[in-house]
Image (cartoon, rainbow, N blue to C red; front, side, top):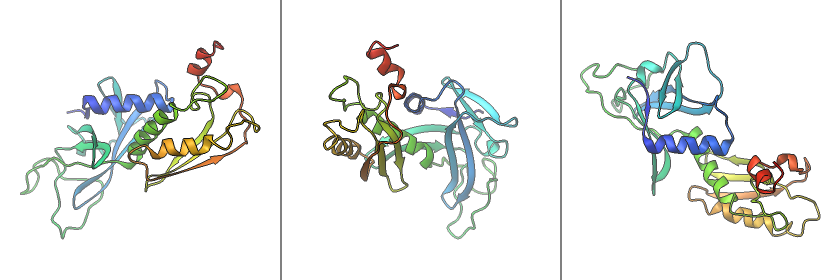
Length: 233
């Protein structure tokens, strides 16, 4: 059986792909990086890198790849997306995920097949940090698109004023941004507004905004949407 996506998970991945500006070559890479007493530790990422021995399948028009070592323990897995008060993230429903006894020593990446041993195969769940951070970044970008430059009628993200969004494991966010010119009258008010917008995203713990001037902003940093909006495309 292939690895599949629920409708909500596929929609979230499409949103992340769009916000990250990733092209048609992008694939969803799924893997296993060991296990613990609760089940498998999963790898989930969006990438344009493929390997010759990858196992490939499609789900809801998204290409999914897995390495040949991980795939036997992922076969038949459904990936869902959870957005609840307890947190947002991707969840694996894996028929091969059998919980180990509390006193068991976690093994490597290989795992027993469904139904192996005396324990019945159960559904395992895990939220992965890599793609969860990409989902959080997409939410941050959505907030940034609500802030507009006072002189150019385009939001600051599509205008190209956001240089970096860094998210730590603790969900502390650092944003590097610039302005269209060093003498811009909103130099004192725009960074606090960006900080407030980022901290309004549910999963963000804290936000810090750095105003930088290198490299200097130019219209080459604008998105196609911004250029189209201004009649430059």
